Image 1 (cartoon, rainbow, N blue to C red):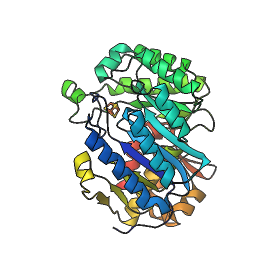
Image 2 (image 1 turned 120 degrees about the vertical axis):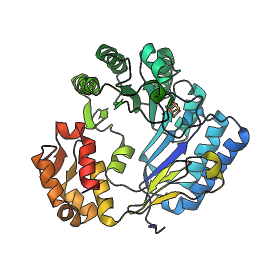
Image 3 (image 1 turned 45 degrees about the vertical axis):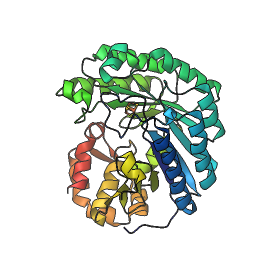
Length: 372
Ligand code: SF4
């Protein structure tokens, strides 16, 4: 595997542990309370950070996701965040995010996060409606979410996101409207609202065959209407923020930034090659080799282009040629023309941007670049 030696722009660490497995979840997550595996996990993360330390000295963002990072005990958190601080360098303007489950984040853990340099929290709320949470197999209550948000704000965290999901079997448009109303009453700077995907081999997909796509589109449109009424700006298909409060980590990755991923199931990208660690804690601990995805250059450029078109701003022509060379426009000339003709892209201010339909049919845009 040929890898660059340039500094990584971002760092992602996957913490696979969860209290229980939600019915819709397809992420790599396990219920594992054995001290030996958890200690081995923490050691291997520290080794990965140490080995890559020379390339982790100019980080622009760090994202700790999962699984459930807040499922780490206070002592485990101290070890985990000490390793990050020992082997990486990041300035005060580095965005340092941690995903939290309201059930497992305590004031003590929030204080550890604060003292470790974390400056952004993302809470998995999914729904504020009991019936919908029950369908998803989420055990968090609305009052637990509200307590977690209050505790986070008391600790001084201002940059907070909550994740919501719509298009859930049995969920009505009125239920979703109520979810959004409650979520917006928290007055947060960032909201993510994802359309449910019934992933194979999840408990939910064994109970339901399909989602109501038409209703999901109505919910998608209602989301934009209600969030933009609150001056939240959509910057990606499923993400809304106050000005300047977008998730820089995700945004930069959609725009082709390099990142190192540590932990089982974590993906990395060095600007040319992608590789993904094995989705199995024990095999990852045993150093099983990652899955390497070395695409020919045209396919890689197509892939990067398609990720960027998830964002509302799309690609400035100049940005494209700076990042990918003049080939990016030349190689995909026909694809751009077809997407403009189909009104999935528009060309304004020297930028290719997805239209409203282009955001809704982002997969069609992606396929046009990846399989052209
Ligand atoms: S808490 Fe999150 S990562 Fe864990 S099972 Fe539920 S959805 Fe998946």
